[in-house]
Image (cartoon, rainbow, N blue to C red; front, side, top):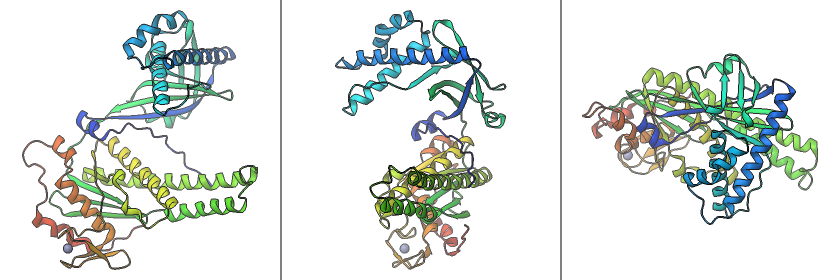
Length: 426
Ligand SMILES: [Zn+2]
């Protein structure tokens, strides 16, 4: 089965910060690299070993202290000593900052003193030169030496980073292969939203609904999720594990079969997330929407229909879909807002009563008589929840005054008009 070349997304997504500061998008380009000659290879390995040993030394010394010192103190403690060992100024800083993080993480988890084995280093932008055009990387290593690496990647993959800045790289050697991750960033300028897109994700469907500020439903799109297909692979894995309950870990063919099903699950999820991502990209540029997503940390009762593995898989899948959506949005300068999804698919958007299940995904309100599709109702509720309390992005971006009015209670029926239409698209 052919697999798509998955983009390696890495994103810094601080919901509050990015909307306030204009936002920054971070993405890593991860590639294999080839040293120009054997001298370069040896020098790189020598550097990485030295780097690791010195990192360990700093970790050891920090470990014996009661308190992890500040960066300033670390600088005083280690700067000249490490410089004397042939490291450049920025190497030194990277080393003690990293050591501090390692020690702190291990102490917080009540762990043992970390022992570093891997050959890996983070290198600051002052200590490398990157020629994207020719895919060449020059690393400045210890004792003022340089190492030349050729990045094994295509022009197409590099193309997207034109206009981005890069600020750090990570190099590692695993089983004689050299890998490089280049961290790129781009500042995002946010557009002023004209409409609101809410996204409801549940086990069966992902539903996108675009609303005008008045509450009028402008567009509805629905995609069936591949969760059932993913579960089939999961069931296969369980079946195999049950059949070889004691031995599956030790038989190569069995392990491979399990791995293959796992890969299928992941690639189905990726392909799907990209499909949704493309659709979002198309819709949002047409409608200039702010995107409203469910805050998954608040999601609990929505998933009582499934066993625990089911839940875990769904949540993992929801996060993947949301991740792609927020990434596509950020790339286009669109804001993302998160709202509490509790009971969005069981509350009547017109009168607030609890809805009754009318079967085949239709919900009915016993009090006001509203009938509607479950997914559409969830989208409408997300919209109201957003426009009532979660106006974070809009209030920050919109000019003062009522340039972006919230829907009035009276307008609610307008959004309601389309709820009976069944726009299934899968
Ligand atoms: Zn009602």
